Image (cartoon, rainbow, N blue to C red; front, side, top):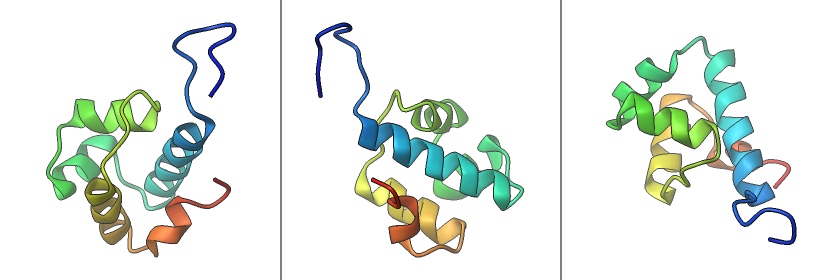
Length: 79
């Protein structure tokens, strides 16, 4: 990750993961609050994850995939 222009530049892999999570959540018709509640995290944490500000642990990604009824690999597509 380059910090040439901005020390706070986001890793493109985290951004893509965040986009994938958000897209799948919306596709399944869940709000951030509903998904967060089902996986046991706060709604604010879910928001931070979807905005690529907070990197979720592998366990959180696993839990998200289970709730969304997806193979975990789907959340990592295009990364």
